[in-house]
Image (cartoon, rainbow, N blue to C red; front, side, top):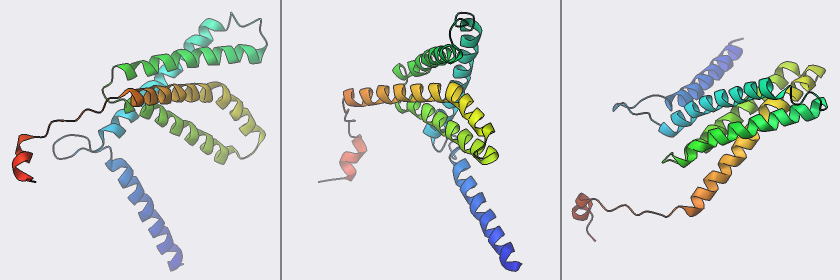
Length: 183
């Protein structure tokens, strides 16, 4: 029994160590700045993106259900899902043009991919390979996969396009460096 306890204690210590490393990225330094501003900003942006996609789905369902009533169910659902996803991706990728750091929009969408993957794995663990999981996959395919995939693909394209067109800017050497590093 004592071996079981020590193994459990070691496991708990490893888990708390991992959690500490993860959450330390969100803490502030002595100067009041976040340790990893990119992680904090993209995480916050991903929450905003999730809300935007939700609102676009809600609006598309309310506005387009009457128009798609005459279509087969799968066609109406596909039209609503693609319309909401395209509109949401356009709105969520729009800030890419205005952000100085071009990694933010892509990072926010990568967080959304992580959330979708976490939801999928969690539901697989909870439901197993059952009929309920098959029903969940239908929900996943209509509501989570289209906006996540479309938004991420658009963000990757914007990021790669911006990366190709970026002109490397050489920052001027600080005055003090001329005197400390002699050649």
